[in-house]
Length: 249
Image (spheres, rainbow, N blue to C red):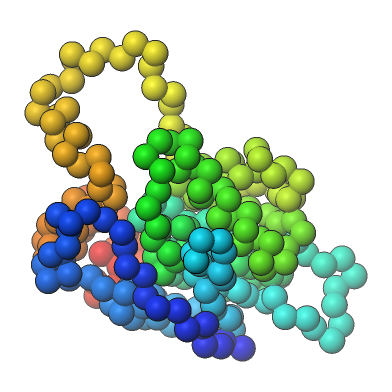
């Protein structure tokens, strides 16, 4: 059965004062995000529950759970839960076309990564190692709260990278690891040819470094959705059989 989520105040993303005027310029809000997610999940036929799973530092991860309730006659060999980690800029609803089939034979969890979707949006470390550790720690704390001894991790894009990072640190918690178009980040060269980078690019990088990587779309305000359609036109094509409007742009 679907049930109401734990009541938690909508996140307020922590960013610099330069973005403080964005709510009046950028056509997004937690309420609009919730409405879009609800609309996408209407295509899912199987029952599921949803909730915010609290972790440390007052953070939480938004979670959908399928086929996780006990049955009168449990299978002789219970299936290890499948945990879905979405890609960069995504969220749980982007699995909408897969959730019914994936949950038909066992428990499935889909969660919004820390900093994405309806999960907490905390400040991240400025160095790659620290940021990666925050993601991995959040996933481990989520696993403990949900009560999973082990799991099958399926990660797409950035979720694939983080799934691999988690598995390297907690191999005893991962039964199987599946990667779909996973990201990888090469190490920074020891002696990068700094002078080969145009001055204007270095300046832009210095200005934008304090911002979330998606800040450019937010700064575009009403033009943001149009930019997404131009850059990732495949999004709309992938969900054409489910939506005939711009629910997924």
